[in-house]
Image (cartoon, rainbow, N blue to C red; front, side):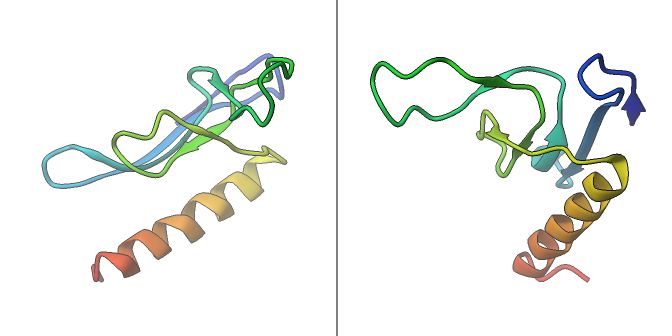
Length: 88
């Protein structure tokens, strides 16, 4: 699903779910995620583009380049996940 977003013009939510409708993988910019802090008093950096590598992952920042690269990155990661699950 691709929609408009003020940052780069695209709002997206690409996901893979298991047979119980539990998210296994996700790439989206539906909500903000924080960078993991390296120092205690570091400035707060919030990103909207991010991935979810598990159902419990709150999000890891993703560097959006363009829609074509987003789709390539998603399908490359999707194939890795499916290979790990031994799904053909």
